[in-house]
Amino acid sequence: MNDNPYVRIVDRITGGLGRIISWLAFAMVLIGAYNAIARYLGRFIGVNLSSNLYLELQWYLFSLIFLLGAGFALKENAHVRVDVIYGRLKTRARARINVIGSVLMLIPFCIFVLWVSWPSIRNSWAVLESSPDPGGLPRYPLKAVIIVAFVLLVAQGISELIKDIGILRGKDDPEADTRPAEPDLGALL
Image 1 (cartoon, rainbow, N blue to C red):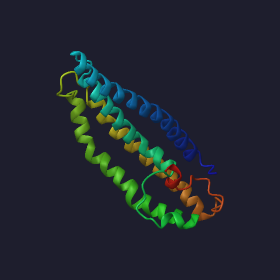
Image 2: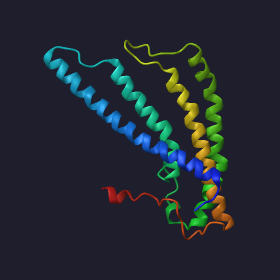
Image 3: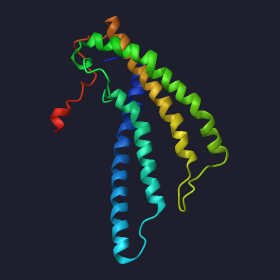
Image 4: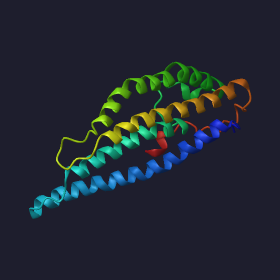
């Protein structure tokens, strides 16, 4: 267990956000089901029961889940890994790989995305961009979530980096790995 206050705060925020995201996923499924039922029922009875608003709301919820869920996936060690050998390594070796990956790839990539996306987001807010489709939603708030999501991902990346450095320095017992294990996909099938 890491006693760093930064780690505790960021992990608590990310965990809370993960719980909110699970409800967004539920809402997205309900809206998607409504869209499908309303489209077919509307054709059957000859009345339009759906609109672009519901389609875009479903798309927006998916975007929120994807963007805001990245930090939670990192915290829960549920993100995609390229290296199939990683899961078989000892805790200290995994910590070394995580430190290198965070410093050389995760954090620089997040900073790059923030830098590159800022002009587009600023322009979207300047004109209060909205959907060109009839009945569509405004797009500028959703674009602002890109900034929020990547700031949160950097914060969680730094939190994980602190944990991994603690393991490498021997401050945390590497055999008492409190981080979630690799998900067992075979158990889900």
